[in-house]
Image: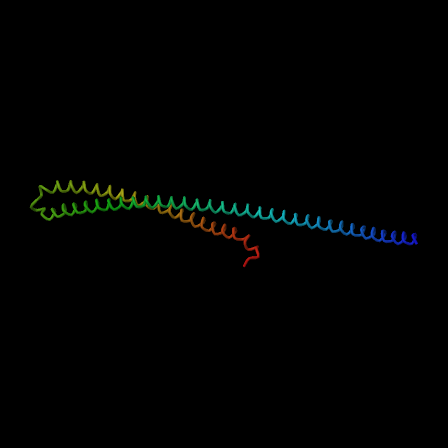
Length: 191
């Protein structure tokens, strides 16, 4: 009987030992799965962080490009303001020259009115002709100044046209950069 009990005990111990071996194998298999899942999760997180880092660098590059373009536009607007100031000065000079020319014309008119009395004032005609010659010279000088101011105005208008062309190109480039900045957002699954 004792032998029977020993056999039964030995059978129970063998069953228990086999169960514990299978349990140990199952736990090792479970631990292997957990390690594999952890490694894969770590790889996914690393690639995601790398992608976010690259995306952040691209965004900073686009923002820097946008700021650079805005600075160019601001500089162009400042230059255009300077050209407008030069044009304003030239307009003032043209107005002043026109006033001087008007004054000269009025004096010429006064001297011409003396010629109506030529029969009675032949002695005064020589002096009036001399003054008229002086005023004609002044008028020629004023016309030359006016032509110079008009050419300066034409030059400033050409510069302003060039600045507007540059400004137009910078605004187009800025629109392109804004579209490039927004393109990564299109890949995200947001509405």
